Image 1 (cartoon, rainbow, N blue to C red):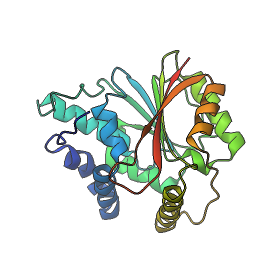
Image 2: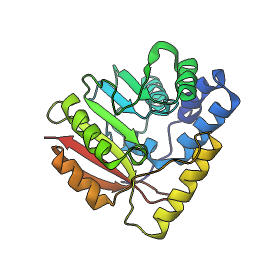
Image 3: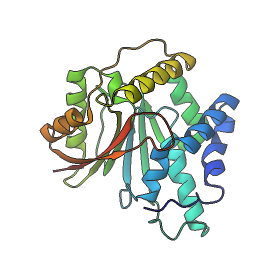
Image 4: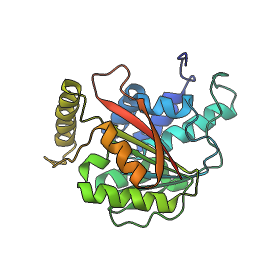
Length: 237
């Protein structure tokens, strides 16, 4: 797919609400949304098209919600690449995040437009959803918990529902080692300390998804970076 320029104002529209939270939150949002290819891919590939009820697990400061809301604003005013499918509309956005600081940031930035629950995704109620998004969070929970979470995600989705799971490919050698180093630095910088991680290769993730009643495809998702990231697009059977 030929890359096109982002809609004018999309990045600033998605980042601007975080000015109400803090200067750091705004700078982080702008940098992350500009540099992380997953956010662009979600719109460019129409990965959430037609999915009204969207659940973001391990949502951080809810950048996905801000991105989707900004995309809908751009689309409504006619500033949208004709090559792209329309963004999801009539959204019901819910987010679950463990860290209280991130939850407070999201609530201050996005207000009542997103339902943000401070809870542990290993035990929180997921409710019903048409799509579940998990970006760079599953490696922070133990292997047994990874399986349990995926089983509960499957129970929350109808047949044909979609899970977008971005992971680091533990089978990618040096690129994965670099990804892990940057991850540690970011976690320390954000005050989370050193955490134990539980990583898998893409093949191992795909096998686990099959065992949890998903069919998945893997799309490289580290364009323009040195990371070993892959987006698993999984459909519930």
